[in-house]
Image (tube, rainbow, N blue to C red; front, side, top):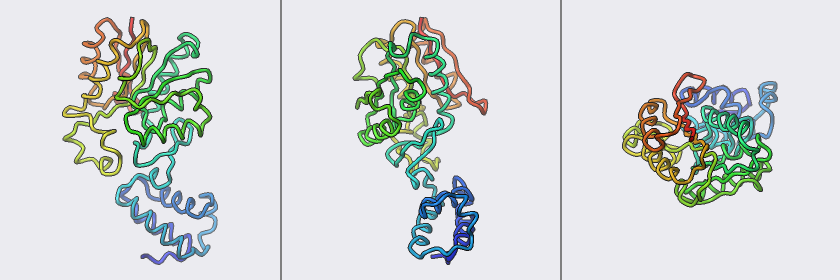
Length: 284
């Protein structure tokens, strides 16, 4: 084990050890601050403070896991999304900033439709619950259903709903996509697996995050095909669907949407980096 006698020595070693991981200096500070129960600013102001042997060992173990590619959020058990802190674990994907576009677009739709309490809204494949919970927090009168097939993910989503005081307005359902949902939906949001199976082997994320939440089948579009098929007889006239997509899938997914809903309006929204990120379907 490295010689980590002081906070300053520990931070310097952690920064060097995690240089090729998801972060370096910040990650080293976050991990040590969490272990010691202090603020990051306090660490930086007290580099000469001695570090207990037990804390040094625990820190070295966590830095080794981070350097091996494990997401920082799994080590801390928390990730920020849409300005809210969400509990996460290896049973769910780590919420990502690009998915905030899905929440933005859903909020824009809800603002111009019937009062939220009269709309039937669903999030399909909720994972940690970040999209459903963010919507419930940001649209106070909204109630919605969130589906998920993995029981561990559903448990964590319920924890996050309780954490943010919206558990009474989100009905969590264990089902395959929309299979257990009835007709009459006004808005459906989904961030489904969209990575082609053959591409998973070369992705570092697939070594630590749940493959079932990443694997989109041979071309990455299988879950989307199934969702569109299920949605055909479950949407209300004038309803809308929002699906996060892989940036290279724009034209292919537009074709799927046009075949599933030929009379609808279809569009692709781009994220802040200018990449295709979201399919929007507006039904007549």
